[in-house]
Image (cartoon, rainbow, N blue to C red; front, top):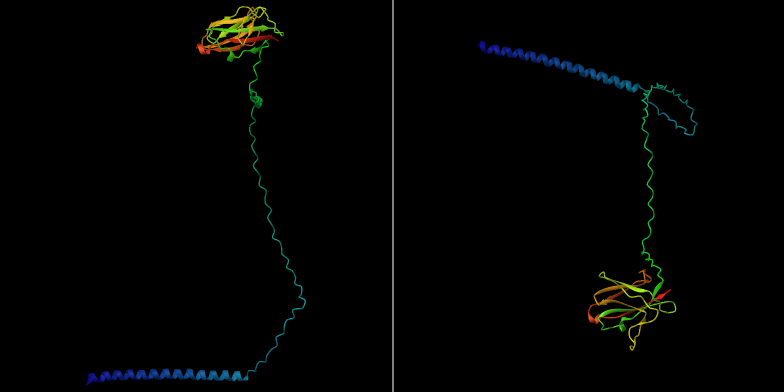
Length: 254
């Protein structure tokens, strides 16, 4: 029985405290609601008594009006700093070179321009000695065939009137190195190739160096001492019989 009463008593105490707490909270809420109602009533009365605002008129600005002159602000220049000149380094004097005893070399002269070279062309003709006799005529070998086995050259040494000149001779040099001379010429035509033939040639001296051999005889007119008096005449021969010929030359004084 005692065990049951105590829990119930505790429960009643707890319920009593709970009821008191709820009643206290309800009173606080009622006070806050009444205060809010009074406050709303005061704000409504103040609003009713406040005068109704009238509309205001905003004037349109006149853009043609002359603007008033505004003062230009004076700008005070900021003082500039004057740079302080910096001293430059003074160059140190260098030692003056002492002249030596050796003189400087003389100026080099430019090379001289090359001399103009002559235009190459044909070599100048070889000067021909001015001999007192010239070659006036030389026979045609077409008509000078022979069966005689030795060389015979009929020569007429004449003046301007075709008159024979004596005491002259013919000197010949062969290509093999042989040299031969004729006897002295006479003062008349006494060297004749033939008398009854159709191709007659007459002279006043004959050059007969010997039998036919292959090579060339070069002959010219000379005086007694061997001085050349005319240009040289080359005469080629062959050792074969079909190449045998005799020759004829006129040396005429100029």
